[in-house]
Image 1: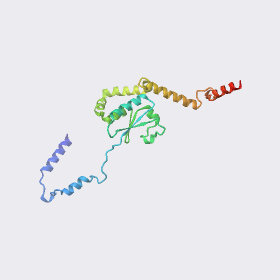
Image 2: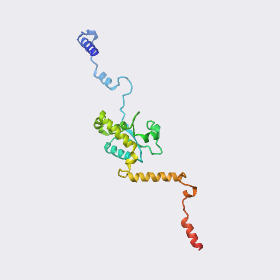
Image 3: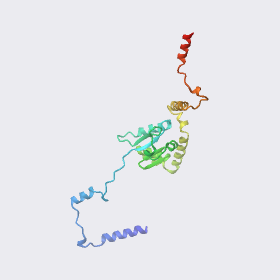
Length: 216
């Protein structure tokens, strides 16, 4: 309050004090005014807004994640997309190109990368939906009491997302496909077999039966 009063007094004194004729500055010419507007104040390059879409990391083998991706895509229907979805399951996924987020970290929490800013957990969820035009709703969800419920709900869904995925449309089929793929990979590595013969496929059974019939 005291500082504001002092500033106001100084401003009034400045405007009421007489200005000598030689101290008056001539009005700038239209050309000079145009140049002043065209050039940035600091003489450097003009600031360019960051229009790059934010990166949304998701698990392509999780139905909860895919449902969230579909919902975000529904709202992100503008000509210029605001979101860029990155599947952390892709073989070419690189942490160095995605805010330093490792595969293990991305599997634990939902991540959104906005330039150099990396948000995770419920913060990432609110940021992603804000970017697609639901900022007014996300502002409501950030109220302290409501935010507590949002964080609690996110924690439950994140911890049990694969179990919840089974009950979503297409979730059971996706879970079965992922499980079968893991079984095939395990068998290919020799896992789950008591001895080598159990992992061998009998490709020549039909030929052996034919040879036996011919010999008889």
